[in-house]
Image 1 (cartoon, rainbow, N blue to C red):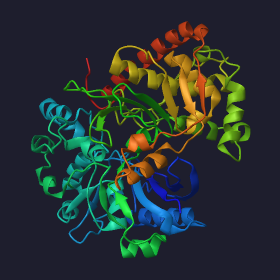
Image 2 (image 1 turned 180 degrees about the vertical axis):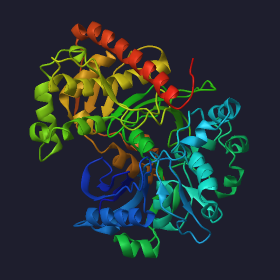
Image 3 (image 1 turned 135 degrees about the vertical axis):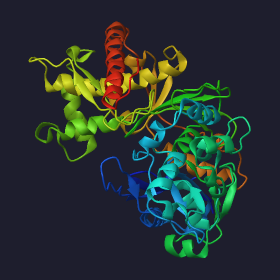
Image 4 (image 1 turned 120 degrees about the vertical axis):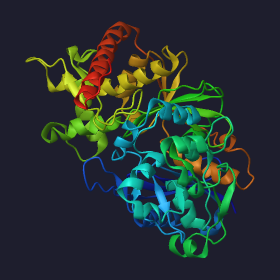
Length: 503
């Protein structure tokens, strides 16, 4: 009887489970929404018990019609950062505060340049409010009684792994930000002291490779999910890292982009030049060897969804594909540069290539002759420009080799072509959209001795390549110069609004 591999991907808004054959063929899937609670503007949190219930629901759905005894291994991927804290008894001390929560912004603003330098040079990341350390520091002042109960600090993947097995660990990728020293691969007490959270050290979990076994399915978890008790479970990893594994990427120079709710550029490297103000973030690969430079603008396809939602009569639809087709029909008739209209896609603040929680989106260049089509294309170009902005900030030049693209936005052919034209490099899109689930399944298999996860992840996939149109290079160069200048001017404006002076 052929063995099967189970992957779990606990995202911010949806939880998925997928069952695979070793050749990468998906046998079945299950999914469950994962509600985000926003008590006040800038706050983003989830009920941890509800997340676990969602995991159980997704697994049970995936197991329908599948003999659970065939599941040989389980791997976990999940949203990263945020603060998922438990007390001594392993009970949540409160709701999970998520990666996109901004209530800890004053903590960052209160750090001196010297304090920021210590932290930034440790993990080579420009912190944003939604990291575990900044949230913990905020809680120390806002809810000291809650902090006093904290015994374990983890991430979503760690929480799911604990619920499945009763064991606790964190993989290299989740552990990186903000306290893991990239040179020693150990937690930095200096970084903790710089952030003023020295007491968090005793709550951090031991760091282990995501290719190792966390434990086996507990009896309680077996009863709730339908899985067989003692089925091996690997140490959970960051969803981004699982996606990279699912694409079989583990070599320095490998590059991929994600156009999901947020946009992300990921560049694998084996060398990091420490910086007082690094661009974006750095996380270790799931294998704990190479590093991934992560440049993640906060808004990606969310800008597309936002714009279409403003026009329900003309851009509404029953499915994302129907909605995209309506906007594409307008935008494809507009020339590169959107007839002078520029959109800054900072609808939820920004974290790359600069960190500014108070950043806001804006249209520029609107005239009496501007149309909805101009604005719609400008939204699509704005997301592409943000990717180019990040890449240039990191590398100093445009890509010289093709880049793989995935995420929901990669299903939009017009948008893919715009990105290829803006980046001036071929964009390769796979028909598969389950790389995170598949990567998690491969990590689970690796933890049982089947081999290295990235090698296991190699599978046949149909791909489409979007080659850049040379005729668009000059107009997009000009349009990007305009975009970058407007972005810089707005950064000065936001700083002045907060009483700062960047000059």
